[in-house]
Image (cartoon, rainbow, N blue to C red; front, side):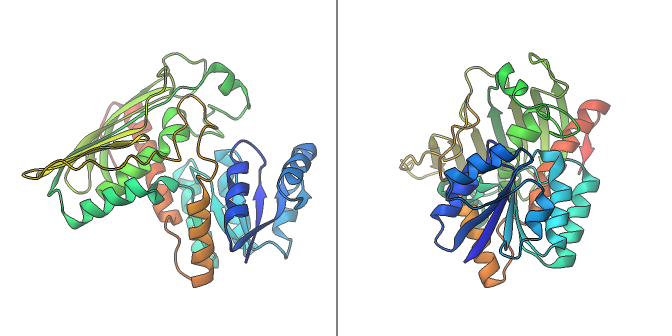
Length: 339
């Protein structure tokens, strides 16, 4: 049994708590928030685990084996480092950090201490992406020619006003790409074996925020393919997260609604069962599946019990952030940026 503590009792924390409740080899034993009433209400809702206001005190609790980091993005790094030093395994919400220097420090400490750390990119563990990844790795569609990710969401002005860290460079690390689009960027990068370079444009079109609400990038992937990444939080109504992968021998198209096209040259087009994604936030950032985090909780507990790396290690978790930072740099300099 892996005993978890949750640090930060905000919007995403209930998804971690419900997944821990559902996992047969996990238990929630502690929660922490700087606002005591918030932590108390959260605790009462999820089985009355003990309450902390100071996360370092939670980290000193000998009953806690692992922690979920559910705080603002720019606070992740220090908390992950402190958790690793305390010998706690870690599940960190996306993005795991927002600067290269902080990413480097987290990875160094986690690898030094030997704790298990997983990053929350649960889309990788869903049935449709796993089928796509396997088909590409087996070469079923031949060489990948171009691959695109369309990550067009909507966030209201009220959303951005709901917390003072949102849409700030200091704590959010960016806008439509770093907060919302990071999941899709992780996925397309995973399919393609990594991103080689980007040429991007990022702008603030409609919201009164300091970070981007629209970004477009031309991408060169490490496997030789090219493509486009588009991200937004001002597309109303929000569109399904959509991926289009075109290969020598056919095409794969899938979205939050399921696999739309699975067509191989010379074969009848397959009509696949539509498996709706658990991660389909649309206009509402809380409208994801109640158990969307269960696969990644199960993966982390299994990695602890079997002493193996988690599916999304810190080195994997940083790749999407590095891509986003490169797009921002390209937008600022007007030049292609190599990762």
